[in-house]
Amino acid sequence: MGILAILFDVDDTLYDVSIPFCSACDKVFKEKYSIPSIDLFLAGRIHDIPVVDRIRKAFSKFGIQITESEVMEFHEVYRGEQTKITLTEGMKNVLEFCRQEGIFTGIITNGFSRAQWNKVKSLHLEEWIPRSHIIVSGDEGVRKPDPGIFKLAEQRFGLDRKDTWFIGDTYATDICGAIAAGWKSIWLNRRQDILPDGKTSPDYTVSDEEGLLNILLSK
Image 1 (cartoon, one colour):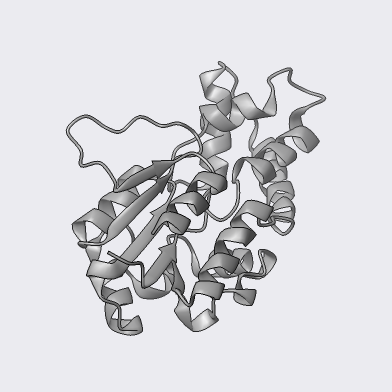
Image 2: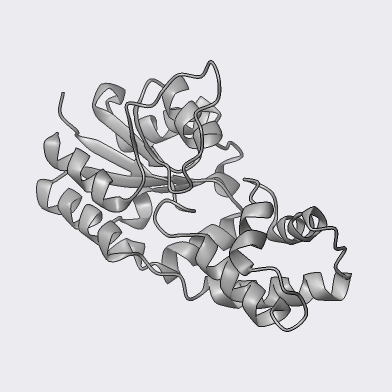
């Protein structure tokens, strides 16, 4: 079966979300606390909660309650770091492959409208994916894993689900949603998460962009 359309998640799929988080941690907390920023990232890593809650949760796991002024300072610095996010060369290669092969590309991303569109801008995604091919949950009133947002994409873009693939980093939202919608799925599992017990496996699982590109080349 060929690939006629590929849609991507954004956060931790098209870019590494640990980079802006850890950079903000280093700028705000490095002189105050000895906890490595990557440990804070992993401790606060819960999907689909605001970053201010993630940083609170991260420190609480180390028995520290940071002040609200520290939380707000972190949030402000983090917002600045988010404007510096970039695609990796590997992901640029994936997107360029799709363009050269004439594969329809699009995005389905969860999040507030303004924040997600700012990421689209910072990542220069419109060089590969037209704005009209991008769906942001905050604009639509439906979010992954609800299969309704995938069906919305089918209707809006004229997709055939049998030949449509979704690539995302989060099993619970990206992969479960794609499977429920009858799409093919590739789990870009950067953090080596474990497949939950009793859950359906994605069609493929990879840990990085090189593995992802190899799958696409094989198809």
